[in-house]
Length: 611
Image (tube, rainbow, N blue to C red; front, side, top):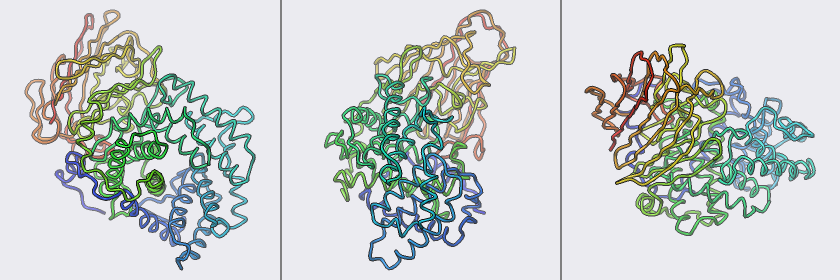
């Protein structure tokens, strides 16, 4: 059992982005470190087979439904990197075949199918397939690696899956065509379905809704255009001008949100290193397809090189021989829980390798990263931008604000099922070390949103029904406003509209200061049992003076609240409940008001001052 980390060490790990270490070597040289990691797992699988354990977890007993495909891809990356005249290669090919025999009958769904068939196609292109997979196993794979396992035919409807799985189905069908396993009919239909859905639910804005128009967006909505372009590239299709235009929009968001420390997207679920590798995918694909200017390409590459170094120095734990998204105070959602530790290593290392290959194809192999990335981001990217994702009955948008080394993503993206009550989807100004969501937090941790507990037991917060998002410049900063004619009633899988309370919200963003002001108005007099407002902060050494909490250490210096009766602060160091994707929180600031009759507008304001 590893020794516990000290509070100081944990804080340093959590805030490692605060003093960016600029990449000094080419991305390609950093990514070379991926192959020894993959080779370690290759040898471990050969030795331990389905009894393999990693940091106390047994991956083959975890019901990771993508694992066989990720193993196939990760180990194929090792084979493809091994020179043809390497005397180890024949034995490695036999070992690959043995592992394929082991996993062929295991559960392997959707993304796992895509990963597996992609690996087979690359091995076929390299002339290694017949030596890497035995004929009987390959025949089983031909039957099992099929998009029809999650798409109804002849209707071509997804079976209880999010809409982005049309892209997965298309990719599988296209690869089956290239493997000689079926004709082009299915891939043509699925391509049409994928692009039609994208058009239907991205509207004029160019970012795909994760739902059928219910308005839930996150990093994947920004990534998807790049992912579709990647599928075109890898299967020999010509990327259309329309897709390149969508990719340009994604690249703009990625560059606007880029940080010289190598950190990436901060809003939405399933972050950790995936918030950074998403940036790699978008920018490497954009560079290869020529949608970046020459200057943007140089600095996007420098940022990508920093992401690669951050993976190796921050996310990878050499003592475990593994990526670590689960300890050192880090937390991810159940979807990426530690039971998937083996598959996460393979998929992340494959992303690093494939995006490095894309950069190489874009002419940047062994390019020296520009040293002035931080200065360029401040000079060349807008200090403030608003990217709209959807309009109509409700607005969805992302405001990005750059304040020196701090980059804030004010995400107004919350709609649809399953995620609306989780704080990574709240309309908050997320920024590393200042404001973070908590994965799978639910209504128990309503980060920085006042929660009304009514006398009838209902709990309401302002999350999902945003209208009239507006921005304006103010003296020394920027303003964002919106309104909601109803709050969200918690307790259901989908956001339930409760019109008993409406709210108007204003954010003001100035150097070192963020203020949010909510003005709540009851539709009729209403009995309220209490109102609460919590802020889980990375700063420590809290002292309370009235409704102002000052911190001795950390990026946030003070947190002040108006409109609630009292505030307190508690040390939550080491608490499982208060962990960001990248490290531990230190202090819970809690403000409260008791029971009252709500019969006139109530203004609640909080202000964060940071350095």
